[in-house]
Image (cartoon, rainbow, N blue to C red):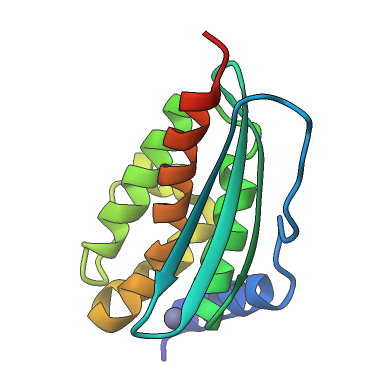
Length: 154
Ligand code: ZN
């Protein structure tokens, strides 16, 4: 394992150990969306809640269980997306999907900047069976945003 792979591994383990955003949050705002996603091949599960205020993702919170990759990925997306605009969230989700499809190669600088720590998952793209683990939370995020937009005041 190369030094950079070891560093990435450490980032993932840190997030898996001390997950951010765990525990569903209720801010009393109307635009709330939730998504429940399961990765049956590994046994990962997440219920993720998004609260929107205008075009800002005010809160991302979740409950879940599963492997280190799935839990660390959800923790990181919570940090990356909370407080950002919907447009920024969409771009970040797309960048993460691209990272998973890159077969272990990196992305362009602009998209790696968007992903920050989540770039640590680049190596997962080499293992198709684990891509579902890493993507689970991001699929829940996208779905929860769509649900929240339905509940947003016109
Ligand atoms: Zn997993």
